[in-house]
Structures are given as structure tokens and as C-alpha cells.
Amino acid sequence: MEIWADTACTKEIEELQFYYKLYGVTTNPAIMSEVVDPKAALKDLLAVQSGFLAVQVVSSNVVDMLEEAEILSKINERIIVKIPCTLAGYQAMRALSHLRLLATAMLEANQYALALHFKCEYSAPYLGHVLPNSNELLDTLLEIQTNNHGPTKIMGAAIKNPEMYLACVRRGIDAITAPTDVLMAILGPNVESMKKTQQMNAQFQSKHQTSSWKDY
Image (cartoon, rainbow, N blue to C red; front, side):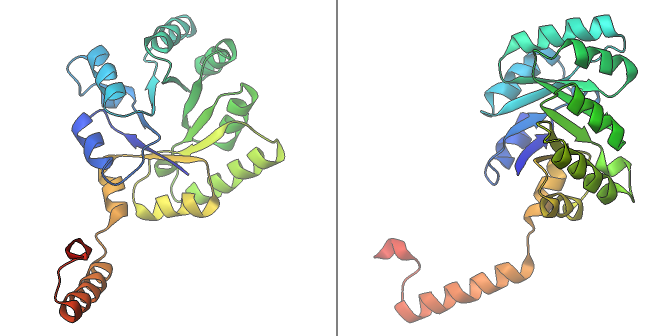
């Protein structure tokens, strides 16, 4: 399953890459509102990692959405344009089939069916916004994807905690994107795992009077 980081902070991405092989980074207008220079931030986000970068259009009307999408796609071939699942967004998706698109702000299964219809590369159901029905939504999306041999990848978004992450993994969806605090929480620390590891290390060191394999 692809793991994406939902952030515009390059320091956070650098830290996450110590633990994860990130497939890409996702942003949205709210995240990008926190940066000083949006255009410079995009370049930094592309430079700090080798994966894709998902960037959402900000306009709410079709004409401007189309223009924004074309501009974003020309910045770098690794940029995937995010289009919201609105009436104007569907019109934009229909017209932008030549670009790599991510259908976002998805709250219902029929929105995924439309993203599939418009051949979007990714779709991002906002799982954290449809609680307590997020698992039911995931199951429905997977059924639609399977029955229609759908090429549109399901990217779980608005992941709130490790339990939601695990629910995505168990169902075998294509990808998830999560903020840094959630991705770090997934890592642990698991106290019992650390304790057991320390015990085994101590046994080795006591028996062989050496601290590690470096001494051999």
C-alpha cells in the first residue's frame, strides 16, 4: 500500500523518510495557506522527496479550475492535480482527462463511481469525516472498484489514528495519506517490543562479552 504524507512542511517530510518509503506528498488549500510562498513551497516539496506531489486547485468555477490545473501540471511532471468532488469539479475532471488527477473531498460512494467514470488516477475518500461509517464506505468503494475493474486508486484520506490506518491496510486499498502526527503514531513506540529487544540484546552481550556485530 502506498503511503503519502499530508503536509507542506519539508522538515516533517525529512523526518518521516527516516521511517517510511514515501510514495508522495499531498497538500490542500488549507495546508498551503500556512506557507509563505506557495510557488516556492511546491518546488521545495518536490525537492525534498522523489515521489509525487498532489496539489489542489483553489478556484470554485470550472473555467478557472481548468486554467489552474494546466498551470500546475506544467510545473513538474510529478505533480498530480487534485480536483474536488463538486459539480464544477466533475466538469473539470471530464475536460482534464489528459492530466493525472486525484478526485478529492470525497464523502460518498457515488463520488468514487464518478471519479472512476472520469478515469481519475486517484480518489481520496475523507474517512475521518464520515465516522462512524468509514469502514462501510471503504467496503463499498472496493466493491465498485473490483466489479468495474476500476483503474482509479483508492487513497484513504483524513486518517485520524493508527486504527483507521489498519482498517485501510486490512482491506487492501491502494494508498493512504496522513498527517505527520498520525504517521508517527503508527510507528509506536511499542513499549513491549522495545523491552523484549533490549532483553535479547543484553543476553547476547552478556554471553559473548561484546556490544554488537561490529566487534567481529
